[in-house]
Image (spheres, rainbow, N blue to C red):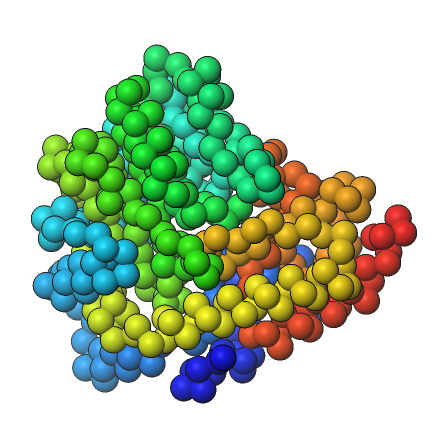
Length: 396
């Protein structure tokens, strides 16, 4: 049942706020009449303790240089222990503004130009770009379907790894396919990295967003030998809908690896957080558990609603199981449309914006990614617009 204390049903107008999800996508498609379900942030107001904390900063009126406080570390350490049963030590933690930055820095620090880095495909674009834009080669490890569930193809990895492979970039939970890797799978990744002496960079930004009955396992919970080759990126920004604050954590148990990243962060002058970042971290991790529980329930209910609606009105879309993230990965291959035809249908007929599969490399062709972290009223409107022109796809 919805928690009456929190209102996720009200549609908040985000246009004309320089919003990446709405204003930027309006510009891309040349229309302000689309419902955007693409960019991965929530359409919900942030938890009130965070808003109140920001207001206190604003009322103070001075926005000077800001340093990290004990609360910045303590909140994250407490959260990881309470929610994921993981012990993190303060000295293992580094501040980095964004995970996209930390992935690029890690590639730069732990590999050389011309080295090879592994990434699973379909792949989140910025993680892929962290490899190619640093002039490294990509070993695309295609996820394979087993019983309607995406899995890592370890046999293919062993067959294709090259001597110049130095790093494995893992997205956990996986964006876009929504898998939450099991302990067994993570151990297999870790043992593979140990065997081939690879650095394991894990993006865990979606780790708090999980479906009912699913346990998220952090790489930090694996055995110490794997922890010592791991660089783990985490953030409250997806969980509490504050990506505009620009805030993330790097957890690096190995002191030598940690020093390399810290030195590079210092070199490029990204060691200071914004004046709002420390407040955001403290409030999110220490005062917003009830909001977090409620938003997870609401997202899970949105998924149930989405599956029911599509099964009844648009059965040509197959929705893969969602274990984590607030994103649904849908296959439209039964509809016999090219990606270009499908995107045109979404924009020109249904007036709904989603992410087309090839945004996540060629392995995503034939699929779309849909963000369900919005008011159910908004989702209903979007789905009804799609259903009203669905026959134009089905009768193609």
